[in-house]
Amino acid sequence: MSVGVGVNICEVTDDVQRALKEFRFRKAQDTAVLILKVDREKQQIIIDEKLDNISIDELQDIVPSHQPRYIVLSYRLEHKDGRVSYPLIFIYFTPRDSHAELQMMYAGSKIALQQKAEVNRTFEIRELEDLTEEWLLSKLSN
Image (cartoon, rainbow, N blue to C red; front, top):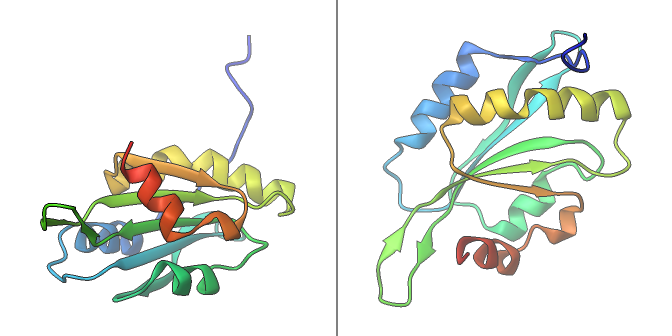
C-alpha cells in the first residue's frame, strides 16, 4: 500500500535556518521580510530577498508575480490601545499560472519550512494583488 505521492521535499539550507532564527529574534522596530524560494536544480530552499523597513505595497512590487515564494513577514502592528506588536507571519504565495512541477516542490516543502521557521500564523495567497495591508490586517484580527 502506498503512503502518498512522492513529492520532493527541498532541503532547508543552513543559511536559511540561520536567517530564520536571526529574523525571529530581530530587534528592529519596523516591518521586515524574508523571501525564500526553491532552487530547482539543487532542490533546496534558498534566500531570495531580505529587506527591512518595507511596506506591504513595496513587498507586492518585489515578489515575482508568476513564481511561487515563501514570505516570512515581521509586521509592525499598531493596536487601537497604542501598543505595538510584531507578529511573525508565514505567507505561501503560489500563483495559479506557475509551473506545475514548481508548485509541487513548493507545496511539498511548505510544512517542513514552516516548522523550521516556527511561525504559527500561516496564510496562502494565489494572486499578488491580494497581498494588501487591508488583507493582512483582516487576517491578523481573526
